[in-house]
Length: 155
Image (cartoon, rainbow, N blue to C red; front, side):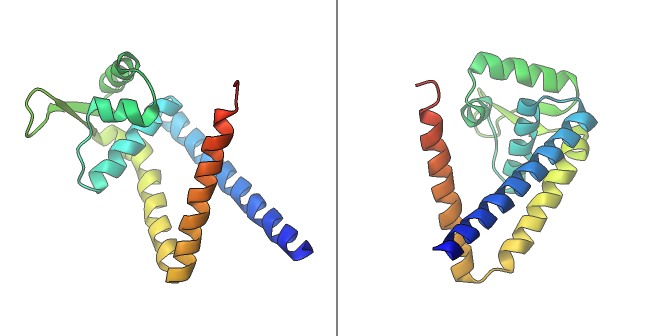
């Protein structure tokens, strides 16, 4: 039993260290770009989508951040004025807009995002299939636990 407790404690400690490093990376990105957390999350989402050859609409961003379309419009207006994003017509639906990260955002926020994504891919590739499955299972269960716990807040 003690070995299981020690392993759980080690996992929790490693997760805490990861969260602290992630928070520090976001703080550096906020400082370098003068963007808010939500604005950085938008840029990260855009860069990830671009890397996967997906287009991003304002509606998709609103859903991703969990904000209203009015709030999203205000965020996108600020990012566009700052030169961090570009709005272009959707290639197949001319009534819709596609949002892309501009070079400024790619340089200030994108460099650490891309470096982290590449490192994550390399780390994952070093795992056996069983280890990969265990990590995915752990992270999905952890995500579910966070979602469940957050439902009890204020409730």
